[in-house]
Length: 448
Ligand SMILES: [Zn+2]
Image 1 (cartoon, protein in one colour):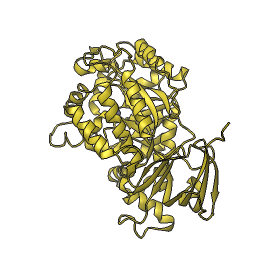
Image 2: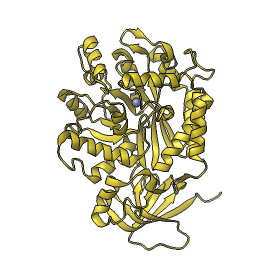
Image 3: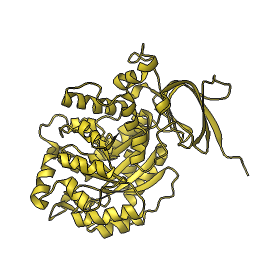
Image 4: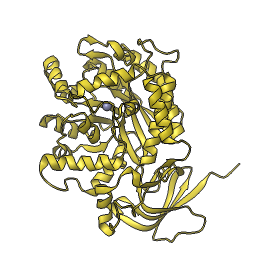
């Protein structure tokens, strides 16, 4: 019998959560999990070095991988979220399991290079072009699982129930690719998926109150409870969603989800942009998380989340790059803080430690990986080494280094990325995938 794989990483400086930034940190690893964190130790021969500031791996809690192919292609048109959606539907109508596997592999690899060690893929593109299931009805899901494995990132596949175009209106056009017709058929398909991959798990999602009626949402919530699975839903991204919900159900989306038994500590509300005060308390009292996607909400002109009141209500905040107008955890966190400053006209609303927690441990918890996102014994060894000598960060030091990183770093400053103890990216390059070439090829193929 061979000994289990062991390794160690030495960090010139590492952020250890409550202990702050500590010099000379040696992280011992067995089977991808941190077994010991020693501080104040010198580098040793034979132990690989991470020079710079080492942070825990980031969690990209809300992703639609295929939206990456829209980057730059929707910026000239005026309009709204709803006109943008037409371009997204055009793209969705074109993808096959093979083209989606190639595209998602490149996108997940881009995430890995940017410092995301985990991704929550909110997956609704399930079926063939006319809505007929593939021979394996989970073929698209399998393509995404393959992609994450190839890219070396941890995946929570949030399989989304999507049943209708709107209350009482059947799915039409490309939406037929999304729909399982009934919540029971959704549950049967997801139940057949069965994942044994070491870095993957299955979660559930309710696409929105637009696409899933309350009785169907109850079925999805019950499935998530029975499987102890994370449960996510788009919530109040757009005022129109609220208006339609109020007109149909005389209820806000949040209150409707609460009555359907959806809200629990397992639940993550995605966007949570246009909430009533009572909605925030419903979410906070239920112990849910909110995944804010600031660069997407900015890009799609969604509006501003009332972040301060949401946090004050007790909601845990995390981030996602959603439509992937950019893929950069620092930009998401900077936007999260910056948008709240613009809205509240107050500075330093969250603070660097809370922001970093949102990007790391809080995000991983929302994806069903509660041990991850921290540099501590028992956590998966996910390390992101930020080069602190770049033009952007030169001169920052001491207690202000973390603030400087959050104010000014970009994904280009990520020097090395370790996932489960293994090096996945170095110097901006993925260890096994030529990311720019793979993206270019996959995006051209998706539109051809
Ligand atoms: Zn989304």
